[in-house]
View 1 (cartoon, rainbow, N blue to C red):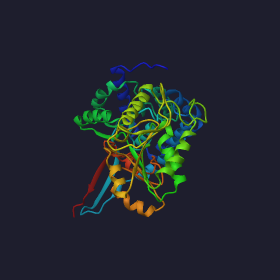
View 2 (tube, one colour; view 1 turned 90 degrees about the horizontal axis):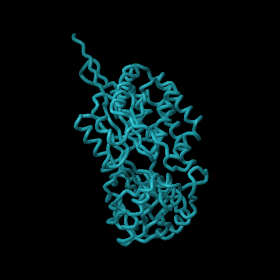
View 3 (cartoon, rainbow, N blue to C red; view 1 turned 120 degrees about the horizontal axis):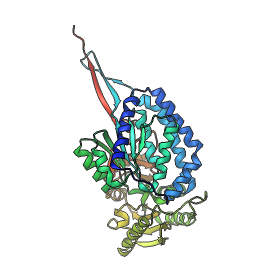
View 4 (tube, one colour; view 1 turned 30 degrees about the vertical axis):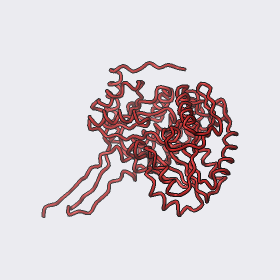
Length: 441
């Protein structure tokens, strides 16, 4: 494990100052120039895809094939915003009694991003790409366990031609964040992480009257109704739960099965889960790698054990060896068990059955989290009508919840607030400025 020298308080201030100086020039650039550089970042991502993916695998255990896909998705994001951002931030005119009324979308300055380890490149890129296209600059506090990825990203933007300071990496621990947020040159904060981390950041930023966007945890439900294409739904649920070794806020963690199809669905799913290849993350055929840290695997084991003690059944898996936790399925899970109530951040799936639509809705909404829900049925029109009954930030029908550049991403409840991606995300950190022009007769 490589170690990195932590920035001193003065070095932190200096980096933020460099970013602020860069902002004063960067905000004056036009969209064509910004798009050119962002496109270049996408080119570099594709050229260095395997090199960058390997760093992810080494630092947090992501299987190399999934790490490569993450880099490719980042490149797609660059292409998307290079093309769409100018339209998203175009001035809008409004009819009023004045001679002329319009709204401009203008940059606000240096934005701090506090990012997690589970998607070391994607989480950062979905912040910094729209931020730079909007004319802002960013400073990054990445997870300490993926500091190599953070430094690679900073170097990538410099190599693409971005001026020094447009994207600065802070080599700091979590204890430094409060003072960073209080720095008057920091204008806003975005965080992807846990509820405690989000609460701490929001509290500090709120006291400074600084805007925050929080993307926190999730306990997404996979709701399978009786009139379902079983085989396709099984494949989707498998990916939704076990991709990235289950370490994703948007993973489908609670499988809710209609009692009429529960047995056949679970049988087919169990067979597929048991065939998932575990092993070396650098092996292209590996689907389940080690978890990011041994203590995280231990926490997942404790959640499982408590649920078993309360009456859940160990249907598959359940063994842990240091940071490795084998793909696991628990059945007979009730809404009062930790495997249902808490965010299971790893390859453990809880299974609960239901009888009616209303029972399914109530089970989904029972969670304090509200990131997303997946619904499965061949009657898609019926599910579209049901979508309004779920409190989550996203409803995906016959599909796993995922983040897509052209769709807003974010949650409700303790899953956070604000949105990333799409035109909604790029407008989170801009000054929506009203301009009125009148003429005297």
